[in-house]
Length: 449
Ligand code: PMP
Image 1 (tube, rainbow, N blue to C red):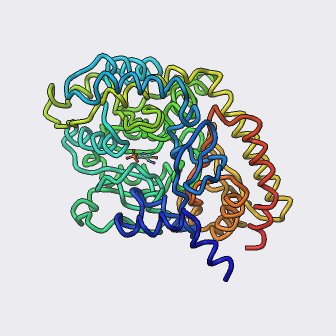
Image 2 (image 1 turned 180 degrees about the vertical axis):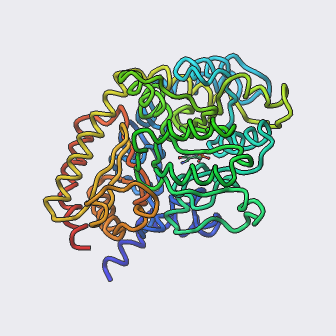
Image 3 (image 1 turned 60 degrees about the vertical axis):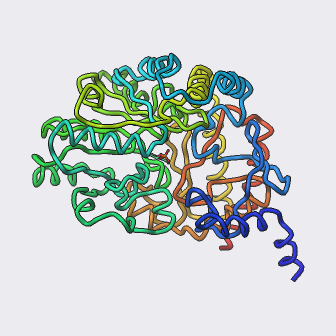
């Protein structure tokens, strides 16, 4: 009784009730609604460094980081200053600016194969355009994607998608026509034999394979060694494009994204590396503002309008304020930033694993650079998780208990077991220690679930 009254006095609860009267589900994007973990989502009032503060004035160490963009932490003073200066010069012109050129050149400096870069506002637009460009260039209809990979809410890419589609256990989405769904082939991740088989059957009709560079929308499920190169080999052989979706990993797991890590590792061991045809970027590239991008060789990218027949456009594309945030973020994201987030991720992923083991919770922690997540249950503990089927088979109810124990202790984890944990350069010893202190009780809560 007392508890019920306390809940109803919580400003987060009041906000959620009000929001549900005005917005479907009370949220502007599904996973924010705490649908799978239950309870009232925290309505945030402000954020600074590694912390977010809700409308009740309660502070949490943030392991969501806006789902990726906040690589430098929240409200980095130099990024905020750049945004303020840009805003004072005008919010949007609908004409080209030098900032866009600076940002495109910065992307190319980090990822040389992104020779020409088209700026858009969301990751969804980037992958949607990649699909259209691939079809436009090849003249072929089919797209191959992998179960558990999320590429935004593009009709062609929603089948067996990760992220919120996984959280809500939806096979796809209503409103996608059968004809569209039939043009998407969904294959199990990390299974090159399945890719070979699909190409043997449909090779001449496949426009592109799209894959997350290292999937992090079904939990973190890194590619097996040679998987991405294998995709490159097979697509090349059949004249299809390879689209590497680095919306989440790009400029977060390293200065040149996941591709940069794999390329460097391959070259170190005497290999020649591999190059996808198209890259998609988002999240960190906008530093918390709406910027995303599509990049590739000029010979492909110049099929886009105004040079080519593949149409793509946007009133707010390359918005000067957003570009200022992204450019400043990338310029500040130096080797020290990447070393820091890697170190914090190593500390936290090990500590989470130790706490869960000490509490007797079967689990596996999987990590890709500074991205990591925990899978619960015996299957996960024995062999690791290599694909969506295994990710779905975990004991996700244990995460619900774990999540709420962490939240009660002042640590905001992603409100879904299918999402990665994100850290930032602002996660200092104080913030990390607060997380470390919260882990043991949360592990015991998971054990008792
Ligand atoms: N691709 C990947 C790999 C993503 O993680 C996301 C978003 N989580 C998207 C595409 C879509 O980006 P947006 O939400 O900006 O549309």
